[in-house]
Image 1 (tube, one colour):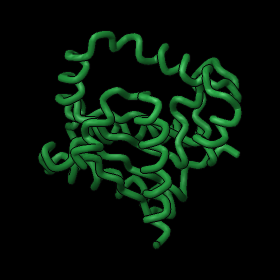
Image 2 (cartoon, rainbow, N blue to C red):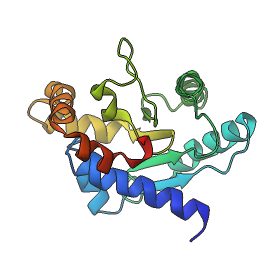
Image 3 (cartoon, rainbow, N blue to C red):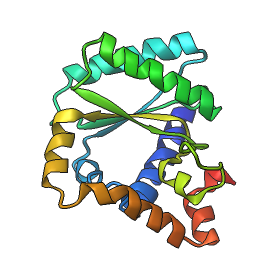
Image 4 (cartoon, helix red, strand yellow):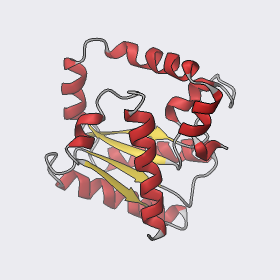
Length: 182
């Protein structure tokens, strides 16, 4: 197994055990079962290479029908290890969507091993909802997102429900589900 496969396997485990397993995103299970989630591991060694890869990924995803790839997790194992650097780069990624006229077609959800919601301390359990083994830019198709949100009974309750789920986890469960934090 090469390093890219190892990275992908860790993210797949996180997705199935945390995101789907805890039902943090009630919309993730269907595309996972249908094998319409693409995992792409960046090989970038610097931010310039990352920007090139990310832009190419956006363009390729745009050309790919949703019945082939519904959503894409762009994983960055070598760069953006500092959360604040990642968060700053997220603005660049959003600007790339706009520059490529993909705003309204895709949106990016963000995940990071040190994710920290504004106003919370680093150790707050609420941050776990967006913590992943590596920095991840999750590309979601707006059209699909609109459909699933419109069909979900109480989409506004998802964040609060997720916070409750994180608070209900024991320390042992947290260590098991988030081994990359130890």
